[in-house]
Length: 227
Image (cartoon, rainbow, N blue to C red; front, side, top):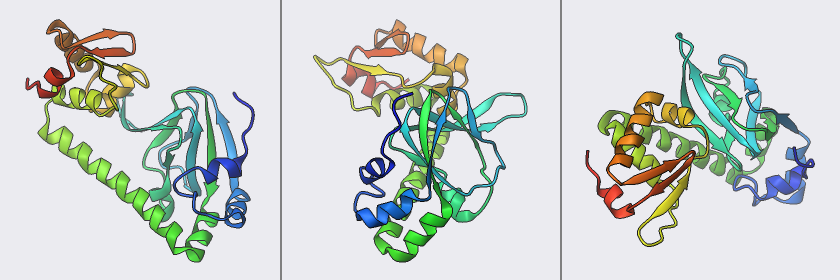
């Protein structure tokens, strides 16, 4: 783990807080706590009560639903600078998912009381919270559309192409941010289907795979590929 950072400095660079004055930030900091978590550690379980929301300073978290057969459905993968838990906090409901660290991570937990107080003080802060929740809802709608209207192969290609590809001579390299099994669950695929599609695209010369590095051999052809 790295040296403990300055909480107020971190908050001041995040979109949700970057227009706040030092005085306003200081009030938030009073109700913010650091939480260092190790890879594999669960920070809350499904149905645990919520009393605030989390910001990822560094590391990576997954939000997932447990299944009766012991498997899971990954709902979201949260990276540095992203937040989670806001919607449940406002609903004052228990968490509908569990959160687990995919890497050693540093989180900030911001108490519900501080958020509600700032919403009462600042309409701009309220609008930012609503904008963040709206973006999350939009993402979930896109997920439903992908699961129902797109094939397994189209979903995987869409995932590869959603990254900011640095194309050079028509090729690009994508570094998978976490394990293939976690990404497969995020795309509503089994690990076996995920691997089969990668192998199929590789055999056609569209991609090559080395560990977590996926090289797109021809960005234009892959984007237009229609299985």
